[in-house]
Length: 239
Figure 1: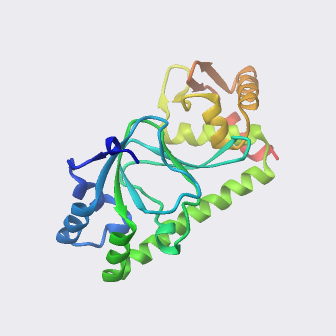
Figure 2 (figure 1 turned 45 degrees about the horizontal axis):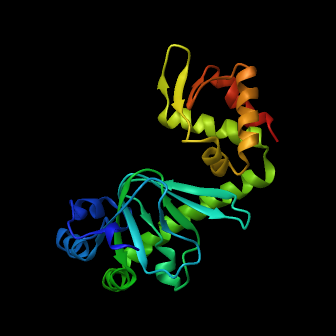
């Protein structure tokens, strides 16, 4: 990690740490103590925070921006395991088990993260066992999400996964428009492919088919879901 990625100035790490679920039971003084030991690191869009297999030096908390957690194959193909935003913690598990980072993390956009060393985090857990219990809840939720990803990759088609992605995106981030619900896709079809476990060519082909069937309307990276009921029906019919 280059020195340019570290900053001794801390915007307000205490407020960020106080929003993190695993630190919610700490007193103001305890959060302030943890904040004093946290190091602010800034990353540009696409920049690697850490890679799978690297020795774990500590955990991270997202202060601003978003990061993606992903696995890579030997051929370079990626599978996104999750996107984490402000107030989320990353890499808690390897702090406990002593192994390397189990996946890679990169900034989706310009992001600021707080780094908490393994030693400081372990000391905190020894003094406050409830923090360790909350880590188990976070890890448990991620495990359930991973099981869902495995299930989708094993038992559903690319068309089904793409429809499912669009439905979730429309429900979570969609805005009403004249023709339907408007959403913005990830920066590229390559990134979208990594999120649904396929390749760019199949993403492009299936987006075109959904448009031809008048479920969606494509305008660059903007998608308008013009028939939500028909798109939702894909989740029941695609096997």
